Length: 307
Ligand SMILES: [Zn+2]
Image 1 (tube, helix red, strand yellow):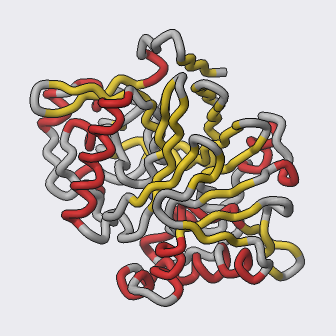
Image 2 (cartoon, rainbow, N blue to C red; image 1 turned 90 degrees about the vertical axis):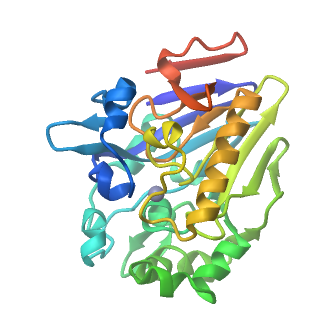
C-alpha cells in the first residue's frame, strides 16, 4: 500500500484492482501514439502495456486519516454486483479483497467515519453497499456518506440516466440503499468536511462532479476524481476521456486543476493512475509535466513512502 503524508493528514491507497485497462486511442479520443515517443515516462510499464496497447488502470480508494477521523474517498466497484451490460463487463460479479486490504492497514468497516464519493459512476461507489441476506446494505455502518447534492440530483431527477443508462443499476444498488438508511448527507461546492478539507465543483466528466482539496500550512493535496484518468492527459490536457459528459467543461476543469497543482505544489491524487498512483505537476514550456511521487524529491515538509 502506498501512503503519503502531508501535514497532519495521511493518505493511503486502498487497492481494488490494478490491471490493463483500455486502449489509449479508445479511452482518450484524439490520442496520438507519438506522445509515447515525446514523453517516454508515459510508456513506462507502470503506465502502459505496449504489447497489448493498453494503459494501466488502477481502481482504488484514498483513505484519509486527519485529526483522528477516517475518511474513505470513492469506493471502487464493489463485490457481487450485477454489471452485465457490455460496457460494464469489467465490473460484473467481482470478488476482490477490498475489505481485506482495508484490514491490512488496520481499518475495520466500523472504523470509517466518513465516506465521500466524488461522483456516482460505477467504479466510484461500489463498496458503498454490500449484500446482507438478500438486500444491499451500507458497508460502513458508522459512516456519514457524503455525496454532491447536484451529482445526486443529476442521477435521481436529472439527465444522468439518459446520458449514461448503464449507470442506472449502480444508483439502485449502491446509492439508494444508503439514502434509504438515512446515512446520506448532500453537500455542494465549498463545503468543508473537516478543517482544511474542502469539496470543489469540477464539472465536465460528469456535469456535477466534485474534487477534494486539502490545504494546510505544511502543504496541499487534491483528490482529483476523474478530471484526469491517465498521466497522458498531463502532457496533453486537451484530451478528454470518452466518458466525459461535457467536453469543453472537462478541458477547462482539467487545466484549472493542473494549474492549481503547479501553483500550490499540491500532490495530485487521481483515481486511476498506475504506480505510484500520484505525483506532482510542473510547468514545462507552454504545458505541464508529471513527476511521479515515489521518484520525486519531495520537499522537506512532505514524505512519501511505499510499503
Ligand atoms: Zn472512474
